[in-house]
Each structure stands twice: as C-alpha cells, then as structure tokens.
Image (cartoon, rainbow, N blue to C red; front, side):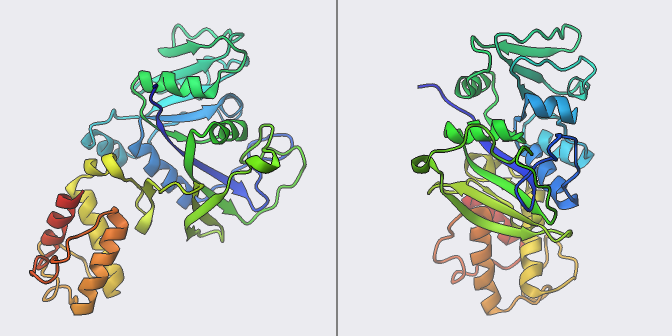
Length: 325
C-alpha cells in the first residue's frame, strides 16, 4: 500500500467564504496573525502546495522569510526552505514567475499530460501524469516517494476541494475576516464539483483564535479525526512524531508562556527560576500548570508528578516535558 503525506490546509477568506472577487484579482484578505501562522506552519513541513491557478495569479515564492524560522528548520533536521510544489493542469507559468526564484529550495511541478512548460534553466522537478489534470491522490503518492512527507496546502479552492474529497486532508486552519466579497462566480475555499447530500463532510471546530482585525482563525478537523497539530499560545506545532523534533528553546518558550498566563505576570521567566520562590506559583497553580502542559504538548504526565516534588524549577518542567514527548 502506497504511503501518503500528512497534509495541513491553511486559507484566509472573507466573511462569506470567498478567496477573491469574481474577476479573481488578487485581494489581500489576511492580517499579520495569518502570516505568522502560515510562516510557522511552513517552518515544520517538507513542502508547500498550491494549485495552478494560484501559481499564475499570486506569483508566490512559498518560502520562509524569517532568519529565525530558517534556523529552526535546520535545527529540526529539515532543509533551510520547504519545497515549493504546484499542481498544474495545462496552463504553464512563465519561467519568470517568482515560484522559480528561490535557489535554496526544491521546486516541483505536478503536471497534466498537455502541460508544455520548459524550465530547463529553473532547476525544477517536473512529474507528468497521463491525464489532463493530475489525479491528486497519485500526485501525493509521487511526492511521498520523493521524500515529501508533510505538506502545507495553501489553495486555491479547487485544490482544497480535491484534497478534501479524496480524504487526503483531514485538518486545516481557516481565518475568516470581517469583509464581504459576494458574487456567485467568486472563488471559495472549496470549489470543484461540490458534494452530494450524502457526501457532505462534517467539520469539527477544535479551537478558535481572535484576530486583530476582528476576524477569527478556526482550527478544524474532518469527521472524528484526532487533531495532529496545535496552535496554542500563538505557537504552531505538529504533534506525534514531529513533536520530538522540538528544540529545548522552543519547549522553554511555550512553558514560559503557559506559566506567565497562569500567574498573570509580565515578569521575565528564566530557565533556572524556582517556580514558587522566584515566580510565585502557588499549589493550585501547579495543578493548572500540569493540565495546560498536557494540552499544549499532547502528553499525559504520571499521577505522581506533583506528589513527588518533581517540579521545582522551570528546568524541571522542561525536562519532564522532554521525557514525555
């Protein structure tokens, strides 16, 4: 049985679920928090996937811009940049498209049978399929065979619909912003042919986060699937096997944010601080700390964690988290 990548979706829409106006002109819907989430997800994945229309209209690089986030990729054993991946039908982008500009990451095109682009000077991998539009399942299998095991899908609507319909994407983030675009022909989050009555997927909203422009980010799964990612305390992580790739500094940052939230303190937290004497954590705060840590890192601590005085300093907290990851 062929293996498939783990695919996370991330999109920004208007209040009425549109991605762009009816003429498909580019519209900046997103706010800073959207870009922060997108960049954090890009820091964790092997590749960033878009559809052919998005490739032509947005002219994207699909890269991580922050030097700090690039360094985190290296610390996790990843390449400095995620691979840029485009699923194309017949229409081919110009070699001058920004998609081909990055020289420090793989560029991959999954092409239909009539695709005629020539990118000999662009260091681009092209995989052609026998149909005019590549079968999305076969395309994802090809990516897995080429070492792309985790993917961020960023749209557009037809790609996201096909990933959802084929059961390839079971988790996504969508930010809904306080504008209305309207238009029957305006592109939506999930275009394609649509679902029949007995096929309509059920969405579970796992969490939501308010944005500075009045919008909301929703973290969703399809059906009864257990979420494999988290965006608690404005830090994105992929749980399970990727979770073990977190650096000690990343664990410390998340732990410090949780402690600050519990104590409602702006005081700087250091790794060797005593939880009670330096930070002022009281007995009930320890219980809340354990609960928040279990939620944030998707772990379960042993019952004797508190009774045996295992949490004296911030470093003790980090060490216990690392053991459980």
